[in-house]
Image (cartoon, rainbow, N blue to C red; front, side, top):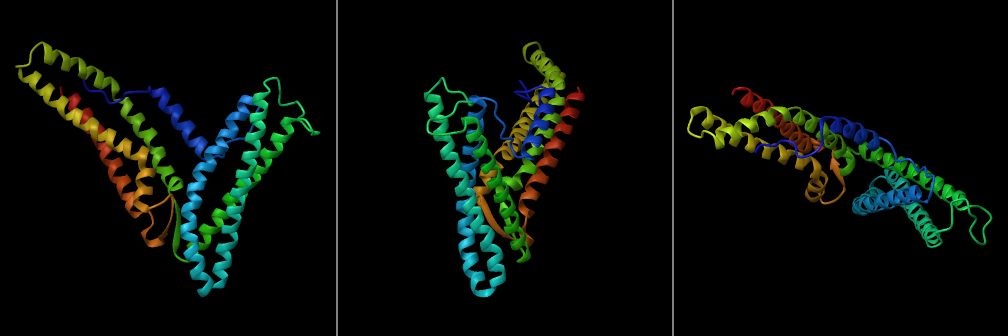
Length: 288
């Protein structure tokens, strides 16, 4: 049997596309109404810390030799690199410390199941809700500063004809395209379903007629096409891991002239082939 889509319906793709692009273009809100929603927000912060820690480890490998070089060659650029770099590390430390304090306080609340966010902890004068709100504001402020200083680093490296390349950030635009492609693929599902009925008939009723042989041959081509489509979708889904392995980290410094060339070419070629396969598959089915 040929099946181009193993999950989702058309409406689901539309919703997923909206959700994905909306969420990734905005910082997750830190609102909470009860201990359960607070737990989710704390988990979001933990996930951010894990990802960002990997970025900073990669960034450290870049910055140390760059700072050493510009300290000797150009003190102005050195300062423009070192200042935001130090602030980035400081803000990460601040967020990590705040997260640990919040986790400890949240754990205490869970142990005392009767506690609510409006209760006041022992030896304190404000409620849990106010304590968490204060932590939330500190995290938000530090994250804003973190992003601001990342932009400053990028701007300074740009003046040296280099690009500070964050793999996850750069892959985002390409990864978003998977939802549009899967939506297009799903539009042909009715044709596939009709073809499968004809294939069943060809296999079980009459395998010797020229029409049945043609249907079986087409089914083999469609199966090959399905595997190619799956392969490109898999590339889009896992492109961050692939690039990190190829580039040696989640953050790399690239000469401006080499920026995006290889990644863009792989994406454009794969996307064009994907769309052409959909067109060819439709024509094959309609030829019956």
